[in-house]
Length: 239
Image (cartoon, rainbow, N blue to C red):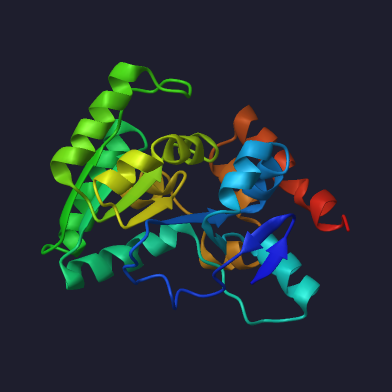
């Protein structure tokens, strides 16, 4: 197990992900922005270091490879690994639930997965948008939807920070309904639904995915997110 920017990196490959353990497993793929935000939030940092983690993003991948002088690690993003988990679930008769994202992207993401894996039992729900913590009413609706469906694997796409807080605050409930895996997946439903187009692999491989997203969606929040992501070098250089 290595460490990058004060975050333990537990999984360098997908090899040990598709296993049911007795305890609930929580996976947080970490991109550059996630590393930076975690280092500015003690609660978030502590929670993530109790979870399974992968590196999601070319720049964090390069930094890890340079630090440990190794190529023995792969980039594992939430957007890509959804397909791997769905394939596993379809094969082993496990149930999957997509929680979060915009309503349209959640519906379309579930629909797309149903077409790819027609035997898979899958459902989803997008609660009304509100800042975290959610109102008791909305959280009760979320919990009822999950209890009624009883998923084995839960993808949570509320955006980084918000989704981790929700998982942390609802850990006892998730264990009670016997969820086996929780994957914090950020904006993966938007990509999966086709509402947002991912950068081509060549762009991803040269670490320019953030620039691509800014070009495709030239908005101020994209500029801010890109500037935040660049601060990873500050934390990577700290002893």
